[in-house]
Image (cartoon, rainbow, N blue to C red):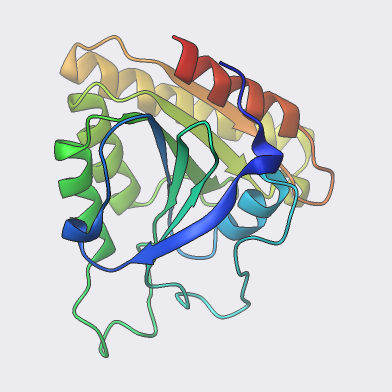
Length: 203
């Protein structure tokens, strides 16, 4: 199966895990700390302004669902850092995501977006441990690579690979983890991101 990314459209947004629809087909979860550039990457991936971007961290507090007629779904989870709405709503995206990973059979992989300048925060590591423990395939996108020199980019990739090797050894699981750098300005590796998402569906 080859995904037609241009045919993917927004269909719904939810607040509660019980609102999730049928559990079949192929599903991907898009996660990342607040303000890592998830919405921008989604818009580039689907070649349309489908996900709202904001200069204010934490504005998105719902899980947005995107889908096409191939039964390919992408779930965009709220950034799990600072959220300006957190005091107004009963919602915890981090807990929601943990429950989601445990119950969702159609989940084919996680698109984990990280700001390459800061790499892994404590909560990122907790999520990575959960995903590795549950044997979930992960595509890590090191975003905003245009902010660093090539030398620093190589150092950051080396650092995260060391962390991932240690985590995989700790849990003694062989799972697919792919790392790609990305810049929304240069749009480098956009085709490779699509290629790797297709790979997760077909393997």
